[in-house]
Image 1: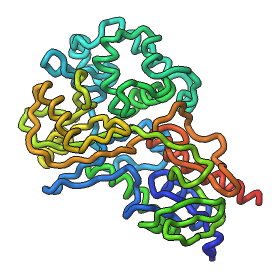
Image 2: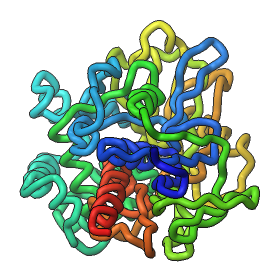
Image 3: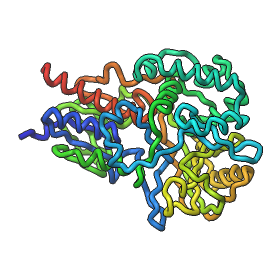
Length: 409
């Protein structure tokens, strides 16, 4: 039987930590998983409105083309709701549809006649897609193109009207960055994922994905409400002053090891209003290009049926370091919706998520070497790329590195 000092210790119970534990279990180990909060899942969290309607903290969808996600998740068991591969965009007071004509050919005419982008924009977008589809998934994410997503799109000849009218509002909701600052590799990888897979939401919310993963943990000892102060190789110092010793540590939480980089974050505000406006009629996001804070919205009835009737889910970028009170942010969202002609009624639910996605100057599929010191290994999306796919892969790669070092020893 494995003694406590022989256990590998995993710090952080988000998806990176859970995947690391699953890999360690597959190799016959029984890790200790330390989580500061009262539940596993990290930033994947589903809450419920007073009437029981599930709502994700920070509206999120799953891209089924994510290679690491396919490796670990049974999509059908999540009872997936499939989104239309495109968006409704408010233009001159009317909702126009822009969809992938390769995936939904019945909407080719509405896409071409939307007035969002000119024929050259559409042709150049197809050219960018060809670039995104070259090579393997990971080779795209590991690309070394310089500059930002915005500079890359401009260099490919896309009109400023098309960028500001569609690409900026669409990808700002994914990156939580309105300036399109992320590196081109992050954009190209995400574009590829949207183009080659489905966009889904679990029927019961993202918590069901967490539940599917954690229910596979058998030998792992999970310790909740256990915040870590620091890590020194094989010793984990808890915030209550106690020390835990193990056979190495996998760290998926930032700021607990001196050799981990300081993480900058993009934040968001997620709100649900009562709304009597007519829904779109199918699961699809809405974009308001002129909005100052709102990045995307969806009518919950389109996605969740009867339980979502009369509810509008809105996500807005929350500027990092801005200390406005929550009510001021919500008022800004209401104003964006009012200008767009959408009536936001009674506030049903709101959450500010200041640390929603790590802000990285460069991305990669995973660390080439996750070792940060003797017997300490780094994982988490802040080490590679701000995505669920990168988080999962980083947990696997870190666990495999520990296993390889253990075998050599």
